[in-house]
Length: 107
Image 1 (cartoon, rainbow, N blue to C red):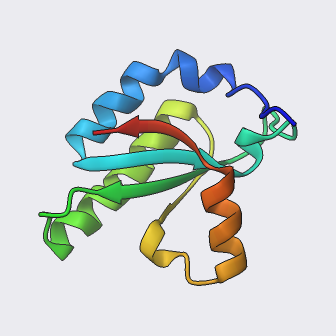
Image 2: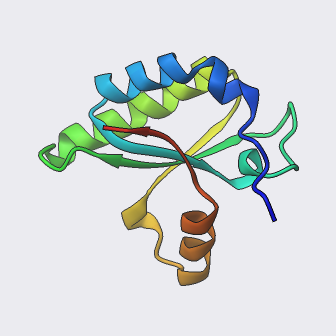
Image 3: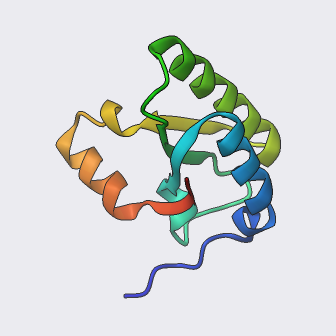
């Protein structure tokens, strides 16, 4: 079965997303959840999986995480859930996220 096409909202903002990722030291950003399925609607929130550059301190990573979340919400004008790969402790949820993710940015 073919994957649904990535919603236009991501294509329209691809340059802005790349700029945000570079500014906030993101090494990888992917979308998952309803935005990667045919259940995506105008009122849907956005779920992102993020990895940051390995040389950031814990303080820098925390600041980058929260700043990125706020800026993604402003860019897409909708709620954003932002998680890191390390936070995926439930094996079933982890598998679901990792198999359903669609890459938006890679450094």
